[in-house]
Length: 226
Image (cartoon, rainbow, N blue to C red; front, side, top):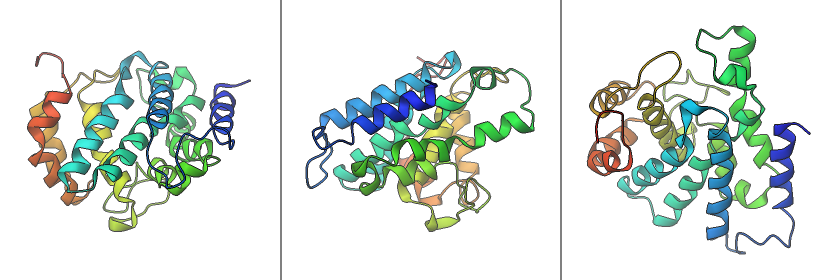
């Protein structure tokens, strides 16, 4: 059984009626958070360069959501989606995820497919569909200017949770060493995100990012910045 099939099987088993990990009114439960965190950690374990990436994205996403004035319940849902945003990478070969040089066309296609693959894995779980988590995972690589993927959605057509996760995902990636570049400082990463407001990112999310900068700094520990 492939890693993709194993992840799908785990999700499918949790969609059975006896696995009541979300109440009838879809309140977020501890079990749901633990499930999402476990799957996120499984993805991060595939690549030593992205250790704890999903956890970091989830935590930063929740802070951003609260900074934007969203209810705590909505922030918790986005937190779950943050843990699961890269679940589709479970089907990407390790050789591609760890490659130090430029990706060829086939390898890049495999990477770009991970939002759709992740949504397909999570789709059978009614709670994740109804809470909007599946759509957040599917669209977290869309861009505010419509130049993202997989569907080229633009502006507010992109789910708000996906717009928030996009900023958190980019921040976490910039703060980590990757095979092709060294980590950026927190201040440099903040500048990069601010410079992409209105193009890559929703400007209102970037405003929230800047307002919550000190709280976010305490959540992440870039190399050389204790």
